[in-house]
Amino acid sequence: MNVTKDEAQLSLETIERIQRHTRRVLAHSGAPFYLIIWGVIWLFGYLGSQFLDEHTAGMAWMTLDVIGVVASVFVGWWMSRQMRRPGRDARIGLFWLTWLVYGVLIVWLTGVYADLSLLGLFLAVFAMFGYVVMGLWLWRPLLWVGVGITILAIAAYLLLPNFLDLAMAILGGGTLIVSGLYIYRNWR
Amino acid sequence: MPDLDPIIHQPVRLQIMAALTTLPGDAQMEFVALRKMLSLTDGNLSVHLRKLEDAGYVRVDKAFVGRKPRTFITATPAGRAAFDAHVQALQAIIQRPGPHAS
Image (cartoon, rainbow over all chains, first blue to last red; front, top):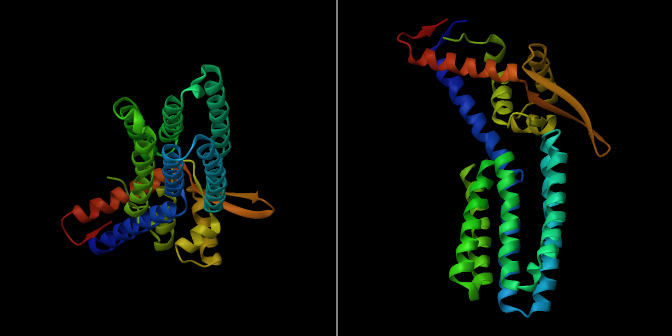
Protein backbone atom coordinates (compact mmCIF):
# COMPACT_ATOMS: atom_id res chain seq x y z
CA MET A 1 0.00 0.00 0.00
CA ASN A 2 1.28 3.45 -0.90
CA VAL A 3 0.15 5.98 1.67
CA THR A 4 1.34 9.57 1.85
CA LYS A 5 2.06 11.36 5.08
CA ASP A 6 -1.00 13.52 4.48
CA GLU A 7 -3.21 10.45 4.05
CA ALA A 8 -1.77 8.88 7.19
CA GLN A 9 -2.35 12.11 9.09
CA LEU A 10 -5.92 12.29 7.81
CA SER A 11 -6.57 8.70 8.89
CA LEU A 12 -5.23 9.39 12.39
CA GLU A 13 -7.38 12.51 12.64
CA THR A 14 -10.42 10.49 11.55
CA ILE A 15 -9.67 7.87 14.22
CA GLU A 16 -9.35 10.54 16.90
CA ARG A 17 -12.57 12.22 15.79
CA ILE A 18 -14.53 8.95 15.82
CA GLN A 19 -13.12 7.91 19.19
CA ARG A 20 -14.07 11.28 20.68
CA HIS A 21 -17.52 11.04 19.13
CA THR A 22 -17.98 7.47 20.44
CA ARG A 23 -17.01 8.51 23.96
CA ARG A 24 -19.47 11.39 23.73
CA VAL A 25 -22.28 9.09 22.58
CA LEU A 26 -21.50 6.70 25.44
CA ALA A 27 -21.35 9.55 27.95
CA HIS A 28 -24.66 10.90 26.71
CA SER A 29 -26.17 7.44 26.74
CA GLY A 30 -26.42 7.26 30.48
CA ALA A 31 -23.55 6.51 32.84
CA PRO A 32 -23.11 10.05 34.29
CA PHE A 33 -26.85 10.31 34.67
CA TYR A 34 -26.72 7.68 37.45
CA LEU A 35 -24.42 10.01 39.39
CA ILE A 36 -26.64 13.02 38.78
CA ILE A 37 -29.88 11.17 39.64
CA TRP A 38 -28.54 9.80 42.93
CA GLY A 39 -26.79 13.09 43.71
CA VAL A 40 -30.10 14.93 43.50
CA ILE A 41 -31.75 12.24 45.64
CA TRP A 42 -29.01 12.48 48.28
CA LEU A 43 -29.24 16.26 48.24
CA PHE A 44 -32.97 16.37 48.92
CA GLY A 45 -33.02 13.24 51.11
CA TYR A 46 -30.34 14.44 53.49
CA LEU A 47 -31.74 17.98 53.50
CA GLY A 48 -35.01 16.39 54.59
CA SER A 49 -33.21 14.43 57.31
CA GLN A 50 -31.62 17.63 58.57
CA PHE A 51 -34.65 19.91 58.55
CA LEU A 52 -37.80 17.73 58.65
CA ASP A 53 -39.21 15.66 61.47
CA GLU A 54 -38.22 12.00 61.58
CA HIS A 55 -41.44 10.58 60.11
CA THR A 56 -41.66 13.07 57.22
CA ALA A 57 -37.96 12.65 56.43
CA GLY A 58 -38.39 8.86 56.35
CA MET A 59 -41.32 9.16 53.95
CA ALA A 60 -39.32 11.59 51.81
CA TRP A 61 -36.40 9.12 51.63
CA MET A 62 -38.69 6.26 50.61
CA THR A 63 -40.31 8.36 47.88
CA LEU A 64 -36.94 9.60 46.62
CA ASP A 65 -35.49 6.06 46.60
CA VAL A 66 -38.41 4.77 44.54
CA ILE A 67 -37.90 7.65 42.08
CA GLY A 68 -34.18 6.85 41.96
CA VAL A 69 -34.69 3.16 41.28
CA VAL A 70 -37.27 3.85 38.55
CA ALA A 71 -35.02 6.47 36.93
CA SER A 72 -31.99 4.13 37.14
CA VAL A 73 -33.91 1.27 35.55
CA PHE A 74 -35.01 3.63 32.76
CA VAL A 75 -31.42 4.81 32.16
CA GLY A 76 -30.21 1.19 32.18
CA TRP A 77 -32.88 0.24 29.66
CA TRP A 78 -31.96 3.24 27.51
CA MET A 79 -28.26 2.34 27.61
CA SER A 80 -28.92 -1.30 26.74
CA ARG A 81 -30.56 -0.19 23.50
CA GLN A 82 -27.23 1.14 22.29
CA MET A 83 -24.64 -0.96 24.02
CA ARG A 84 -24.60 -4.12 26.09
CA ARG A 85 -22.05 -6.16 27.99
CA PRO A 86 -23.22 -9.78 27.86
CA GLY A 87 -22.74 -11.68 31.08
CA ARG A 88 -21.94 -8.53 33.00
CA ASP A 89 -25.34 -6.87 32.69
CA ALA A 90 -27.07 -9.66 34.61
CA ARG A 91 -24.27 -9.85 37.17
CA ILE A 92 -24.48 -6.08 37.76
CA GLY A 93 -28.18 -6.41 38.55
CA LEU A 94 -27.46 -9.39 40.79
CA PHE A 95 -24.73 -7.47 42.61
CA TRP A 96 -27.05 -4.55 43.43
CA LEU A 97 -29.77 -6.93 44.62
CA THR A 98 -27.25 -8.72 46.87
CA TRP A 99 -25.93 -5.35 48.04
CA LEU A 100 -29.46 -4.26 49.01
CA VAL A 101 -30.23 -7.50 50.88
CA TYR A 102 -26.95 -7.39 52.80
CA GLY A 103 -27.46 -3.71 53.57
CA VAL A 104 -30.84 -4.45 55.16
CA LEU A 105 -29.35 -7.44 57.04
CA ILE A 106 -26.45 -5.39 58.42
CA VAL A 107 -28.77 -2.58 59.56
CA TRP A 108 -31.03 -5.12 61.27
CA LEU A 109 -28.31 -7.29 62.84
CA THR A 110 -26.14 -4.45 64.12
CA GLY A 111 -29.03 -2.32 65.39
CA VAL A 112 -27.48 0.72 63.75
CA TYR A 113 -31.01 2.05 63.11
CA ALA A 114 -31.21 3.03 66.79
CA ASP A 115 -28.75 5.86 66.20
CA LEU A 116 -30.00 8.03 63.33
CA SER A 117 -26.70 9.83 62.96
CA LEU A 118 -24.78 6.56 62.72
CA LEU A 119 -27.45 5.20 60.37
CA GLY A 120 -26.94 8.21 58.09
CA LEU A 121 -23.21 7.55 58.03
CA PHE A 122 -23.68 3.84 57.45
CA LEU A 123 -26.06 4.37 54.51
CA ALA A 124 -23.67 6.84 52.88
CA VAL A 125 -20.64 4.57 53.32
CA PHE A 126 -22.52 1.45 52.26
CA ALA A 127 -23.84 3.22 49.14
CA MET A 128 -20.28 4.22 48.31
CA PHE A 129 -19.12 0.63 48.82
CA GLY A 130 -21.37 -0.21 45.86
CA TYR A 131 -19.83 2.59 43.81
CA VAL A 132 -16.31 1.38 44.66
CA VAL A 133 -17.14 -2.16 43.51
CA MET A 134 -18.61 -0.79 40.27
CA GLY A 135 -15.52 1.39 39.86
CA LEU A 136 -13.18 -1.59 40.25
CA TRP A 137 -15.30 -3.70 37.98
CA LEU A 138 -16.64 -1.44 35.25
CA TRP A 139 -15.89 2.21 35.20
CA ARG A 140 -12.90 3.70 37.05
CA PRO A 141 -14.35 7.20 37.78
CA LEU A 142 -16.92 5.58 40.09
CA LEU A 143 -14.07 4.23 42.22
CA TRP A 144 -12.69 7.71 42.92
CA VAL A 145 -16.16 9.15 43.54
CA GLY A 146 -16.90 6.30 45.98
CA VAL A 147 -13.63 6.61 47.89
CA GLY A 148 -13.85 10.42 47.99
CA ILE A 149 -17.40 10.54 49.36
CA THR A 150 -16.61 7.79 51.90
CA ILE A 151 -13.78 9.93 53.28
CA LEU A 152 -16.01 13.03 53.29
CA ALA A 153 -18.81 11.14 55.08
CA ILE A 154 -16.53 9.84 57.83
CA ALA A 155 -14.91 13.27 58.23
CA ALA A 156 -18.34 14.92 58.48
CA TYR A 157 -19.48 12.34 61.07
CA LEU A 158 -16.40 12.95 63.21
CA LEU A 159 -16.07 16.71 62.79
CA LEU A 160 -19.67 17.91 62.26
CA PRO A 161 -21.86 15.36 64.05
CA ASN A 162 -24.76 17.79 64.49
CA PHE A 163 -24.75 18.73 60.84
CA LEU A 164 -23.98 15.32 59.34
CA ASP A 165 -27.14 15.27 57.22
CA LEU A 166 -26.55 18.78 55.94
CA ALA A 167 -22.92 17.90 55.19
CA MET A 168 -23.96 14.74 53.37
CA ALA A 169 -26.53 16.70 51.35
CA ILE A 170 -23.96 19.22 50.21
CA LEU A 171 -20.74 17.16 50.14
CA GLY A 172 -22.20 13.78 49.21
CA GLY A 173 -25.06 14.85 46.95
CA GLY A 174 -23.05 17.77 45.59
CA THR A 175 -20.05 15.57 44.77
CA LEU A 176 -22.25 13.06 42.94
CA ILE A 177 -23.94 15.81 40.91
CA VAL A 178 -20.71 17.66 40.12
CA SER A 179 -18.94 14.38 39.21
CA GLY A 180 -21.77 13.41 36.88
CA LEU A 181 -21.83 16.84 35.24
CA TYR A 182 -18.02 16.91 34.96
CA ILE A 183 -17.88 13.50 33.28
CA TYR A 184 -20.77 14.44 31.01
CA ARG A 185 -19.10 17.67 29.91
CA ASN A 186 -15.54 16.32 29.87
CA TRP A 187 -16.42 13.51 27.51
CA ARG A 188 -18.24 15.73 25.02
CA MET B 1 7.27 -1.69 12.34
CA PRO B 2 3.71 -3.04 11.81
CA ASP B 3 2.28 -2.93 8.26
CA LEU B 4 -0.81 -1.04 7.23
CA ASP B 5 -3.84 -3.29 7.19
CA PRO B 6 -5.65 -2.95 3.82
CA ILE B 7 -8.92 -4.19 5.32
CA ILE B 8 -8.91 -1.58 8.09
CA HIS B 9 -7.47 1.23 5.97
CA GLN B 10 -10.66 1.64 3.91
CA PRO B 11 -12.23 4.87 5.31
CA VAL B 12 -15.59 3.45 6.42
CA ARG B 13 -14.02 0.36 7.98
CA LEU B 14 -11.47 2.58 9.71
CA GLN B 15 -14.33 4.51 11.31
CA ILE B 16 -16.14 1.31 12.31
CA MET B 17 -13.02 -0.11 13.95
CA ALA B 18 -12.21 3.22 15.64
CA ALA B 19 -15.70 3.27 17.16
CA LEU B 20 -15.79 -0.38 18.23
CA THR B 21 -12.29 -0.38 19.75
CA THR B 22 -13.24 2.66 21.87
CA LEU B 23 -15.79 0.49 23.70
CA PRO B 24 -14.74 -1.54 26.75
CA GLY B 25 -13.40 -5.00 25.81
CA ASP B 26 -16.56 -7.06 26.15
CA ALA B 27 -19.03 -4.36 25.11
CA GLN B 28 -21.23 -4.70 22.05
CA MET B 29 -22.72 -1.80 20.10
CA GLU B 30 -26.16 -2.04 18.60
CA PHE B 31 -26.29 -1.89 14.79
CA VAL B 32 -28.64 1.11 14.55
CA ALA B 33 -26.66 3.05 17.17
CA LEU B 34 -23.45 2.41 15.22
CA ARG B 35 -25.12 3.33 11.91
CA LYS B 36 -26.42 6.61 13.34
CA MET B 37 -23.14 7.43 15.03
CA LEU B 38 -21.19 7.03 11.80
CA SER B 39 -23.94 8.50 9.57
CA LEU B 40 -24.03 5.44 7.32
CA THR B 41 -26.83 3.64 5.51
CA ASP B 42 -27.95 0.15 6.51
CA GLY B 43 -26.52 -1.33 3.33
CA ASN B 44 -23.18 0.45 3.54
CA LEU B 45 -22.63 -0.56 7.15
CA SER B 46 -23.69 -4.16 6.47
CA VAL B 47 -21.27 -4.54 3.55
CA HIS B 48 -18.30 -3.26 5.53
CA LEU B 49 -19.22 -5.23 8.63
CA ARG B 50 -19.30 -8.38 6.50
CA LYS B 51 -15.73 -7.71 5.32
CA LEU B 52 -14.55 -7.08 8.86
CA GLU B 53 -16.38 -10.17 10.09
CA ASP B 54 -14.81 -12.29 7.32
CA ALA B 55 -11.39 -11.03 8.44
CA GLY B 56 -12.20 -12.02 12.04
CA TYR B 57 -12.00 -8.42 13.22
CA VAL B 58 -15.59 -8.07 14.43
CA ARG B 59 -18.24 -10.42 15.71
CA VAL B 60 -21.92 -9.91 14.90
CA ASP B 61 -24.51 -11.28 17.31
CA LYS B 62 -28.27 -11.29 16.86
CA ALA B 63 -30.43 -11.06 19.96
CA PHE B 64 -33.95 -10.20 21.01
CA VAL B 65 -34.38 -7.15 23.23
CA GLY B 66 -37.93 -7.48 24.43
CA ARG B 67 -39.69 -8.70 21.30
CA LYS B 68 -37.53 -6.83 18.84
CA PRO B 69 -34.62 -8.50 17.08
CA ARG B 70 -31.43 -6.48 17.40
CA THR B 71 -27.94 -6.87 16.05
CA PHE B 72 -24.95 -6.23 18.31
CA ILE B 73 -21.41 -5.81 17.05
CA THR B 74 -18.14 -6.10 18.94
CA ALA B 75 -14.47 -5.87 18.00
CA THR B 76 -12.70 -9.21 18.52
CA PRO B 77 -9.30 -9.39 20.26
CA ALA B 78 -7.76 -10.02 16.82
CA GLY B 79 -9.56 -6.94 15.49
CA ARG B 80 -8.32 -4.79 18.37
CA ALA B 81 -4.76 -6.01 17.83
CA ALA B 82 -4.97 -5.37 14.08
CA PHE B 83 -6.39 -1.90 14.68
CA ASP B 84 -3.63 -1.03 17.17
CA ALA B 85 -1.02 -2.26 14.70
CA HIS B 86 -2.62 -0.20 11.93
CA VAL B 87 -2.54 2.95 14.08
CA GLN B 88 1.13 2.31 14.88
CA ALA B 89 1.86 1.94 11.17
CA LEU B 90 0.10 5.25 10.43
CA GLN B 91 2.06 6.98 13.19
CA ALA B 92 5.31 5.56 11.81
CA ILE B 93 4.51 6.93 8.36
CA ILE B 94 4.05 10.50 9.53
CA GLN B 95 7.29 10.32 11.53
CA ARG B 96 9.30 8.97 8.62
CA PRO B 97 11.29 11.30 6.31
CA GLY B 98 9.88 11.64 2.77
CA PRO B 99 6.29 12.02 1.52
CA HIS B 100 5.38 8.33 0.92
CA ALA B 101 5.45 5.01 2.65
CA SER B 102 4.59 1.45 1.64
